[in-house]
Structures are given as structure tokens and as C-alpha cells.
Image: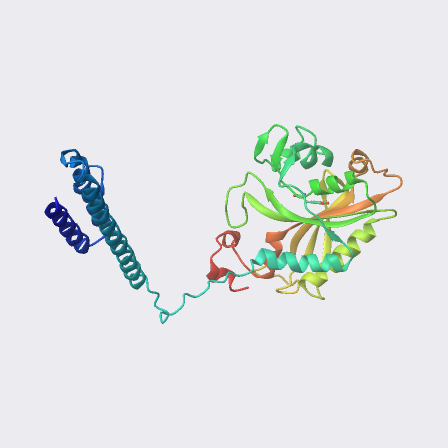
Length: 339
Ligand code: DAH
């Protein structure tokens, strides 16, 4: 029995010393100490040992077991330490490698133009408001005097979420939302994205931006509209800029007009930039229609106001002399960095 135990001990210790990784070491543990292991086998054969010898044999088995266990533990921690050292040396970071450069973007020409425009109107006491891009048909059309089947709806075909909800075709619905709030007077601009069922080309996009303007107060007249927009044009395009109002029609203003600015490239003589006209159209405007005021619970006998709508891309294209609108949507840094 003694010899058998000695042999088990020797071969177990040799196997432990030879185990090259944790998996092999575990196999060794199972082979000797497991349920069907060799040392366990010895205990099972105790029934063949005479009763007076049993305590002695039991003690010897336990000693061998304790020795094997402690060697297993020792080997296990040294293997783990080896594995860690190996991993650390493989994952070493080379701090001498050159750093990757941070790629910094550039403010979009639309944003530059918008910030300048906002500064001008904030300077005149306007607040900057926002409205939803997904809008009720009521705010986008009905409440702006564009009832179902009105021809203006045809020019502003858009994406319908359902029969009552659309992607807004203009920022004008923000006018209605502001008027409905009932806090007067109002002096606001509302920039934002609008949508139309337009094909992409050099001057059209199914998604573009407008800046709406609205002033409602007592005694607001066409003179206020003209003075305000003329002042805006001078600040935006230069002190020498002249403006011209041409009669037009918008369902929610009466009278309505489009405003042109003198070409800031040729000063009005006519050039390639203004297509020989000397003038460039930049916005639509008018006095808020009394019926529009009434629908938003404002008494047209007490209050009046003016409104305007500016195409933001148009301003950016003009100001930065960009000849194709598509460039604005490609987000190519080589293009954006020029402004
Ligand atoms: N919403 C108009 C459009 O998209 C532009 C516009 C014209 C807005 C006149 C106005 C306005 O506020 O008074 O064509």
C-alpha cells in the first residue's frame, strides 16, 4: 500500500510540474483527485485493508492528497501569472506611434447665413421660435387660408403621413401656432426645415429651409413691413442695397408682395449673377390677412401685422456665390471649408 501511494504521489507531482497550461493542470487534478481518480481509487479499495490498518492507511492517503492539492494550487498560480505576463507583453502600447489627428468639421453655409440673419432680427427685438416639421394639415394649410382643393395646395404638394398630418411645406404654420397662443404683441422669426415633392436639381430639393417672420401689434402698417425688410436687406447684403416690392399673391396675406434686392455683385447694372436683371428675388411678404387673424382668435379691428418668408438656401447660395444647391447637401468638407 505504501509503495502504491508513493508511486501515485511521484507521478502526480511529475504531471503537475509538466502541465503547461491551466487546462492540462485541471486534467491532472481530475485524473488523481476526481471521483474516478487514482487516489480516490485507493480509498475505495480500503475495504480490502484489515480494520486495524485502516486508520493508518487513511492518514497516509490524506497526506498524499494534501500534498498533491498544495502543488496543484502552487502550479495554478504560477501558470496564471505566466499567462498574465504573456498577455501584457503582447498587448503593449507603442507610445511612440504618431497620434491620429482629430477631424474637425466646418459650420455649414446655411448655418452661417442663418446666424447672421438671426443676429439682424434679434437686434430689431425679434424672438427666435420653432415649430414642428411634422405638422397638421390645419396649421400648414387651412388656418393660412388654404382650404382643401385650393390651387396653392397643388404647388405645395408634400408627403402625407395621413390625411390630417403632413411634412410641413413652409414655416408659415409657426405663425398660426404663435397667434393661437394669444400672447400679443408678437415679433418673431421661425427658421426651420420644410418639405415638398420636388425633384432634386440645381435649384430644388425635396427638403430645404425657410425663415418665417411675423409681427402682430396695434397699428402695424405696410410702412413697417417695408422699413423692416429694407433694413434687413441692407444689413444682410450691404449698405448700398436697394429693395423693390413686386405685387404677388399669397393666400394668407393681403396685400402680398415679393421683395427683390439690387444685385450685390453688379450693383444693379445686370450681370451673369442676376441673369442680367439687376435684381434678385429673396422673399415673399405681406400684411396678415384679416381672416387669418380671425381664425387664430385675434380681432383684426384691433390688431394688424405683417409676415414674410425667406428661403434660407437662396440667401446662402447668393451670399457665397454657390451655383448649385446640391453642393449644400453633400457635406463634403472640401466644399464646406471654403466659407
Ligand atoms: N410660405 C410662403 C412660401 O413658402 C412664403 C411666404 C410668403 C411667407 C409670404 C410669408 C409671407 O410669411 O407673408 O411660398
